[in-house]
Amino acid sequence: MVSPDAVLQLELDTRHRQNRYRRRKTLQSPQGVEVLVNGKRCLGFSSNDYLGLANHPALIKSFQQAANQYGVGSGASHLVSGHGAEHQALEEELAAFTGRPRALLFSTGYMANVGVIRALMGQGDLVVQDRLNHASLLDGGFLCRAQFERYPHADLAAAQSLLANNSAERRLLVTDGVFSMDGDLADLPALAATADQNNAWLMVDDAHGFGVLGKTGRGIAEHFAMDIDSLPILVGTLGKGFGTFGAFVAGSEALIESLIQFARTYIYTTALPPAVAAATRTALTLIDSESWRREKLQTLIAHFQQGAAERGVAVMASPTPIQPVLIGDDQQVIKIGELLLEAGFWTGAIRPPTVPVGSARLRITLTAEHETEHVDALLDALAGALKSVGGT
Ligand SMILES: *Cc1c(COP(=O)(O)O)cnc(C)c1O
Image 1 (spheres, rainbow, N blue to C red):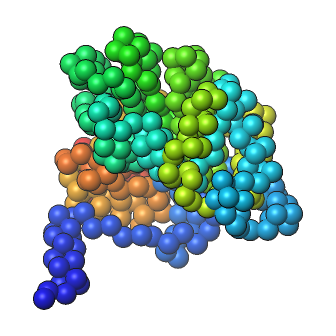
Image 2: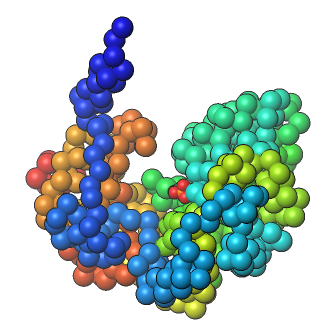
């Protein structure tokens, strides 16, 4: 018999040859503008902590106080005995924040997406998704046993035709609000119209929009002024703009009660630590009271795009803090990422299968804590790195 290691090693070797081998770097500081990574001090441009709340003193204080009061572990799932006062309060505040009757906490966004799709859809139903949706949404589509169809990114006509040419009674149209590796927005008003015309429910995952989009940070629903009727199933994650950890679904009473009854990733998992919920409640108040963080991001995004154009660096058209630079070749993106790290800048080198083959990219993310000088320094280093590998 061939040992598991021998078989696995062959696959690992293949991954290596494809330049798709992934290695973790060790972060030895909090997330922030200045980070310590693998022993080297550099400027961080790779986290999803868009508002700069992950290491905010007010969140730390709430976290510490709640740990003193409730301990560390929640001790059980929400349905057994792990649903605490902090979780309950946060759910009520998230419902108010999103303008929906109810909200339900999940332990991660991955679990929220898989759990919602599996709870709502099954054999004989139809799930239609954008090809570039987050892996957790796609996995939900595969796992739910419904017919699962994907349309090319942002291709509304294709979405329309997949729905129109199918007779399944129960249909779900699913999209990211902000696409996580491209930074562009879904055309939600058009998708909502398509869903409506074809008798489908619309589910939106706004992991990267909450806290960032909309005048008051209510995300893509606020950006497009969409109420619960046009957007009945709204998912948010807490590990990005909120600066903490976990996720939630917001919607009607019937939706949330159905998830409590039927979402397996909700039922069969331990509730978040109460202190995480407490820190998230503080993040919610800062999203409201510190609108300068959103405004600062807009300034930085404009500065980045203008500075890139001035230096002849082609960036993808993105109105969000996710500012990808398309490189294409897997080996080149690794090289550029390494050059930038040597120069003191930590960016994300993203390769397939996270993005489609041939579209490897640097994923640069901005946060409200960056200054325009940081952006200028990054762009200078980036222009230099691109030149030295012979890219554009
Ligand atoms: C990060 C992300 C998730 C997963 O959320 P986690 O809480 O990290 O599991 C889901 N959807 C999108 C669009 C994301 O970017």
